[in-house]
Image 1 (cartoon, rainbow, N blue to C red):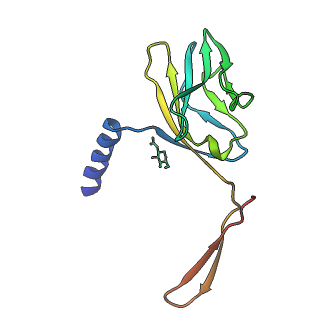
Image 2 (image 1 turned 180 degrees about the vertical axis):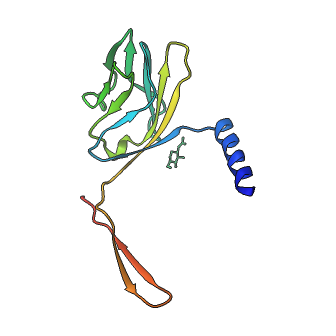
Length: 141
Ligand SMILES: *[C@@H]1O[C@H](CO)[C@@H](O)[C@H](O)[C@H]1NC(C)=O
């Protein structure tokens, strides 16, 4: 019962104070923002250093990149209406807002870009109680 109540409260909290949707990306890979712009809209990027820069514009179904930093890496897919960003960099982390100019609600995504790591190696270093595990990962950078 407690669990049900908590889940219910959590749902209310999320819908009332719903912040941007969390997205995770990996350096060098690409990410798609799952909010469709049908014919006209913008993609706006905000980070600690920049407050709300328009980086992509879609007008009447034609996409134009708006920012040097994202040019060549930012795309808009007319079939799905989604924006995507490729060759991710650590500094691409931030909030991306998909603004729709057709009167529909805009959507925000909080993107965090991570450095890729290999699968963790888990080793039992002490097999009596209390058991100890050692986890190590190798980064690519
Ligand atoms: C975005 O995510 C980061 C890391 O989880 C968090 O510190 C930050 O507060 C989030 N920003 C917003 C606007 O939700």
